[in-house]
Length: 194
Image (cartoon, rainbow, N blue to C red; front, side, top):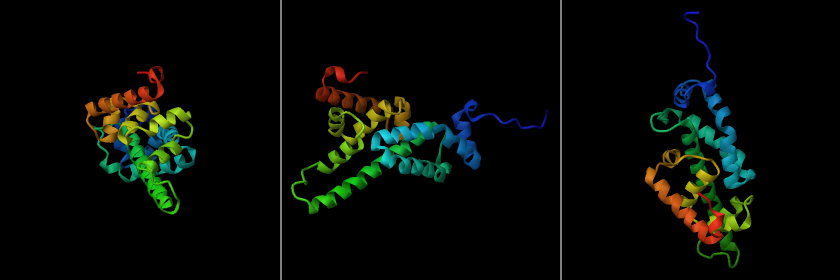
């Protein structure tokens, strides 16, 4: 058997090895897609609702494929890298919705309250959540909300979130703590665990 290459299933290889090989091999990148599509789709659907999820997830993997040469396996695992791309695209989608709402607000009376556009976008995006929780999430700073939802919806570690969002490790803990404190204040002490 000398000289033969034995194919090793994706799940048995280290994610960094797959990512490095995926830089030059579309079939390898397809394995990364297959391995992470479901969890990225679930995260995006929970953040934006099912109507936007397909487009954002497709754009996430398209962006990852286009920027695969920029991927640094020593800095981030593939999973954290993909969640970072998805979170950035979610932010762009929300900004687009906010601009649309501002344009509509110029035509409609009594809808130009400060912060109205963002709070509406967040409430619409959190449509599958309980109304009280959606309202509490809408009241959080976007950066704090992103960290909280990466923990709650995607199950990312602090280190993965820091990598995904390009922020210091300690900032993840600060934002998460602040978000939980604000949610507890709005929802009651027993509503937010951890």
